[in-house]
Amino acid sequence: MRYVKLAGSNVPVIGQGTWYMGEDPGREAAEVAALQQGIELGLTLIDTAEMYAEGGAETVVGQAIAGRRDQVFLVSKVYPHNASRSGMAAACERSLKRLGTDCIDLYLLHWRGQHPLDETVEAFERLREQGKIRRWGVSNFDVDDLRELDNLDCATNQVLYNPAERGIEFDLLPWCEKRALPTMAYCPLAQAGRLLQSPVLTQIAERHGATPAQVSLAWVTRHSGVIAIPKAVTPEHVRLNAAAGALSLTSEDLRAIDRAFPAPTRKQRLAMV
Image (cartoon, rainbow, N blue to C red; front, top):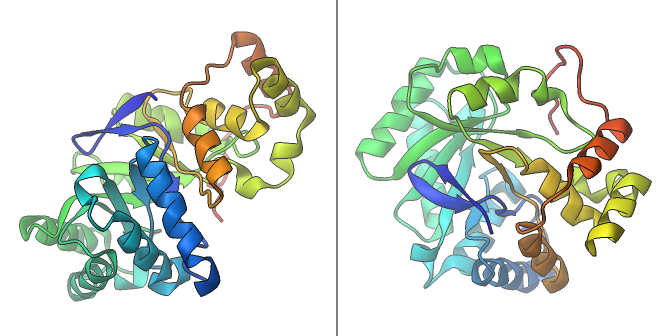
């Protein structure tokens, strides 16, 4: 597994996402077991949010990390409507309780909302001073949004990125790379839809004795400073995600993906799901 420096810690380039976890009590045990298996396999960064199942995913994460909190780099996100001075403090307390911890390693603004950024940053910094969070960052921010945070202590930007959604490569990703600002890629498998049925990814996977999903993860993390956070619930998918951290694509592979999924040639509206 390769590692990236994020918020002062070395984290794996492939972590674990939790979107859609916590929605069905009948799947809870499997979700907890999957996250624990991932930790054991080195996928020690876990990303969640108060929005996911309205706190249900954080509860699942809390169960998974019980007794092994020191092994995990924990990321959660606050709703934009809670990102005020008083609202964020209350939201963070609720997240901490569900997560069963006294500190979140990295706390993100889920997307930009109605509260002024300077108020949100002040709320983040207050939580950091209180020891409730270690660092803060943002999600779904484009270049113009990040410019407003330039020279502030923002630790990351989490955005949609996969071979079928390459818009950030035109300006956002280079902007972040220039400033050594790590990027976290959500939906790196495009929610396991048509992307993984791509003939090109399938052919590349066959050459490497891998799966199309592993090829997509290796492609997303080919940039230094990019971390992918796929979700997996079955033991086999967790194992495959972990193994993808060791997959290296050739220049021929990358050219084939470029032909199938061309890089952007102009500025695009930031994609979000």
